[in-house]
Image 1 (cartoon, rainbow, N blue to C red):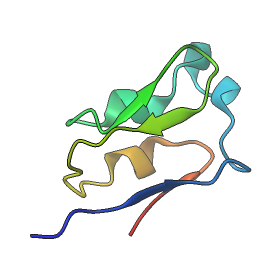
Image 2 (cartoon, helix red, strand yellow; image 1 turned 180 degrees about the vertical axis):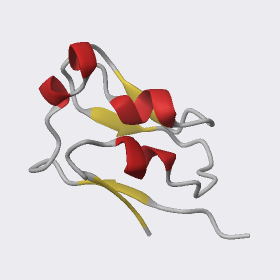
Image 3 (cartoon, rainbow, N blue to C red; image 1 turned 30 degrees about the vertical axis):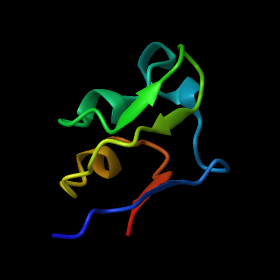
Length: 68
């Protein structure tokens, strides 16, 4: 089984567009692969495995997250 690789396009990521500055992709990820240090900051990817469900991609209003 291969692990999906997530990438973030910082030019498309605008945390202020998410409710209260909380990244919608963080809340959508069932395995907590995506985190956020504080409100209005860019999300980051943790070393935990990605299940390739694409919930983060679907929830991002700026389409800033890609899975490969």
